[in-house]
Length: 334
Image (cartoon, rainbow, N blue to C red):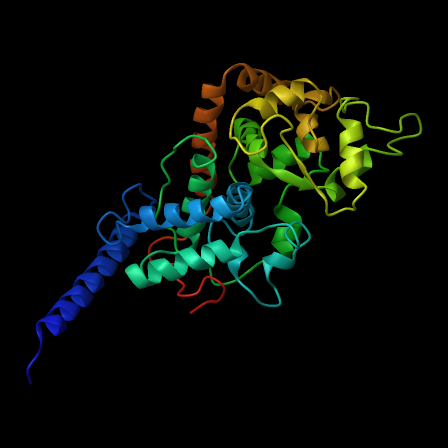
């Protein structure tokens, strides 16, 4: 049988691809650790592809950067960083109370995965895509360029119950939120630094409207909310619970430290945000307030701590080696 030059080239590429996959699998099995060079030999174009797709999504809607960051957070706090949040089905985490009609960006991940399956079939996990998409969502919003450790594999089951119970709530006290972080190996610095992600976040009125009217027997509006901010939030929320308000009233699309400056001026939109500095009855607040003050005064320190905390969060119970799988479709197991 005769083969054309194209046949030989195609077969060679397939062989190289198989070798690359084996290199990735072998490295993961040997170390069991995430690394910053995991795809350097088996799919070096992963960074270019993810960045390009995230940039396109953010050009269409700048808010998508924050959404992809939040998607990573909500994935890692349930089953670890295993892309379980992307799975469809009756037990899907997408329909848990903290995620339903709230977490976004699934279609962006689908598009990235399709591109990577064309470029490097069976190599890049959905969990790593989510982590990289969050990185570029931050970077393209003006935030720090931290190194993402890679080599995660994808989980086989979703955990809707875990999503309902493990994710911190904007109604929780700071002590309760800190405990949720401690349960996954994160500390008080991580609580405050990762809360800083709200510098590019938005919230539905449902999550803060209780601060705007009939707050208590003695106060119509939450007294820890700046009196000049309350009327604009009330106006926004007249449109219903699903109306959106920026969590950083100064620079909602730019990743900076204004969020922390807002908290010191009582301009935190969520009670959990303002609680980082305002609740003297919570013993954890002395520590969180000191960090808020430090980040408010020093944006570089915030950026450095944020990058470190993102790496720490991305290392919550990852599947490596032969655990899990590399999903072909992020919405379903193979």
